[in-house]
Every structure is written in C-alpha cells, then in structure tokens.
Image 1: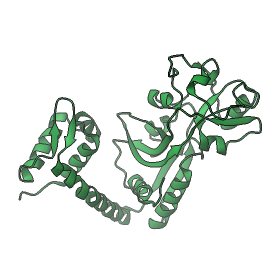
Image 2: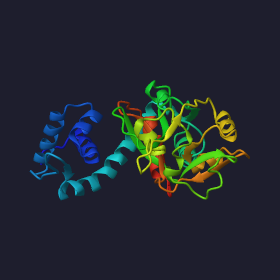
Image 3: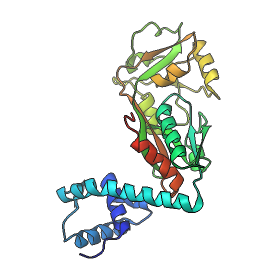
Image 4: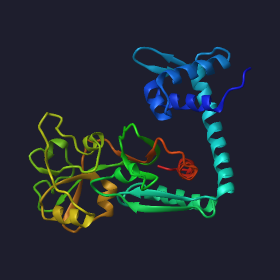
Length: 301
C-alpha cells in the first residue's frame, strides 16, 4: 500500500470534526479544492474506500470513515504528545498565558491541569491574567495571551474551541433585594420584559443571545440598557442599588456575592458551557500540551 502522509491524516481528522469542506479548509489554511483533492488521494491510498459521503447539503462520515477516526484520533494525539515532549527536551518548555474574566467557572479544572502541566514539564509556567469586561477576546486576538476561558457558543473563523472546563452552569439573573422580581423562586425570560437588563458586553452575538435573548418566547423585546463597568465590585454596586438586572451564570453569582444582591435561576435557558479557546493559526507545543492536560483530566466536567 502506498505510504500515507501524516498531513493527509491530520486533514482527515480536521474534516471529520468540521464535516464541512469550507470550514476545514479555513482551519487548515488551504483551499477547498485542495482539501477535496487530499481526501481523494487518501481514499485511493486506502484501497479506494470512501471516507466521506458528500451531498449538496451535508457531509458525513461513512462507516469506514468513522472506524478510521475512532482509531486514528488517539494515535495522532499520542504522536503529538511525543513530538511536543521531544521539542521541550530540545528547547525547554516555555510559558503559556491564559486569560479569564473571573475565577467563577472552570477554574478548578484549569488549576488541576496547570498543576499537572508544570509537574510534567519542569520549568514550564502558566500565567493567568484578567480579560476586560468589554473586550473578552481582544487579548487573544492581539496575541497578548495564548488561551482564553470563554463561554459557548463561540463560532468565529479565527478561533478554535478547545476542551470544555464546565458544561452545566445554571443560567441566573442577579438583581437587588428591593427589585420587584427579587422574591421569585425562579424566573422566565418572559418575566424580564419591561425591566432594565444590563446589555452583555464583550460577547459575540451568539454568546449574547445565549446569555439573554433579545426577545422573549412570546416576541416581546428585552429592554437592554448600557451599563459599562470596569470590575465586579462596580457591577455589584449597581445591582444592589436596583439600577439594573444582570444575566449571568450561577458560579459567577456564588463567587461574587453582596448582601443586597440575590441570584434567581432562569428556568427556560439551558445550562451554560465554558471552554478554553485559542487562535487557529497558532502552532505552539506549550499551549497544546496544556490543552492535552485538560483533556486527560478524569471527571473533568
């Protein structure tokens, strides 16, 4: 059988994740036609077996493709770890910079991964920094950090979503104890119509809609107000004064408490997920080694 190029296998794995030739091409920095050509070449080397079933609307793996992915993914991941370890031996491990908005979600998992990373690669260091409220992805895009803890969904062409840190964070609203809604056991999005809701800052349109939809299920608009804040203390002050309502997640509310602020569950929004995300066009063995540590943690979420 002709030799299979490792780049062909990596392309196959990316396409099996994306199931979209255009997105896979963008992620790999190739043209769509080059991706198609490489898949055909790989199929030919594997005895002419089809790996993907492609129609005008959908791309899906064949049975052969699914079997190959199941065996190939852990093998390539293992090879990558061996190569990163060899690179560390040659040039020494470096620094991984991680940005996070606060210590409310996923930090326990991240902390365990950092401990393992620094113990496995002596000399390696992870530096944590705070991302701005109103520019959460900016430090990543300016390459001031290597990874960011971000809320999902996040579908940006220049960003790849890595391992999940937490996947069941309850959606809540924070508001002052004197607010008209403060005595409720739980709330619906419908209940928020007619009240001043802090406009989500520093989020993509997808993330903002997941945090608090612009309209209620019945079609009523949510009244968003501009209330930029520089830190959590300022946000809690505004909430305690009854100036606005803040849609967020339960770990944030539990971490940043105030005697005059309550957190009430939003019953009609699904739980929130946060994950580590990075830039697609970056090749960094240090960053990838830390991501591997997160992936390998038992009972991660």
